[in-house]
Length: 455
Image (cartoon, rainbow, N blue to C red):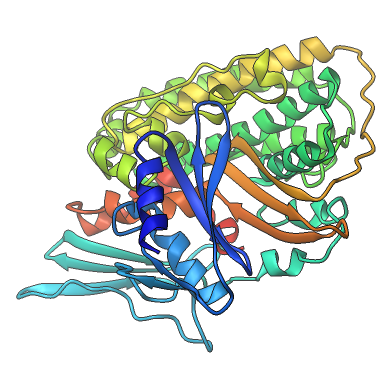
């Protein structure tokens, strides 16, 4: 137990820890090497399921170890937060609250005013200043990963695509890459270009929705209305090109599902209108002053807690899976990594603004390179037994899918580590020292998913 703990800590000094999960016979701790992902495994006897907590040293793994303990009956010595990650017997674990003279406690959720899924946020504050925020998800946990076990890997792609609507294309892409790795298959260039088109359309509509939500949280409703109108146009392009507004099944193992790709003129028209919107939004001094200084996530906290995506790059980070270990057409169409340093809501919005612009550039380039080329929709895959990891850069950050295929060709284990799963604990820490009315703005500046974190 101690040797394994020491090995994990040693690995973290020269590689990036990105998550952990368990199977019936092993605990897997995942790292990013210089050009790919790999894991350090601890094979345990079924009668001996005790480990020393790594999250005491690497806080980003706190949710992972809590989930492993709850789902696979592992016992972690020294686990800083020993509560179950999700509810048990229809009861959620008690929230963590700060105690002290003059402190009060506010609860937001689990039922919210909109149509978002449930989550409970317990705020401890002194006056209006937030002392501590505890975020609890898990109200809508569906057990998707267990449901996938024993299924045919190709047929299971349908369910993987529907884990979450907002990042369906990215997760489907990651799952497809894992199965293609197990099949020894490399997709032709035209499939890679089509996948890039879907991935960047998904990034565009998500970033537009995020900026619109941040405009609303800053009190500028015209910015919300206009931004959501542009998001709707982007989603219609998703439907035209990939057959579904949320891009369900647009990317499949071995290929893509093409509706039609004659969308270059519509993309350019949307780009011009988005530029006009960005000029108005970022030219609004009142909005910028509301964003500036709200929800600061320091580079140290972002690093220690494993921030990914725009949240990571707005706090001085530089990682982007598209450039770290280039996959698909990103090996040819190199993205321009957007980043900022202030770590506040403004920085996160600036990163998304810059990524929006680059997404249109990548989208136009992929459409031009695909111009008139017939895309063979799918390749036949013969998935071999083994383990593989697919990793892509989704709208909210790194989307990772670990796949285990048994000797019978069926799925033994699928584990999803979404960008939202990684970033939800960061929302809570970004609220430290802010005022209570900042919470909607800080939350929307991350604008994370519930569904893919709950799975």
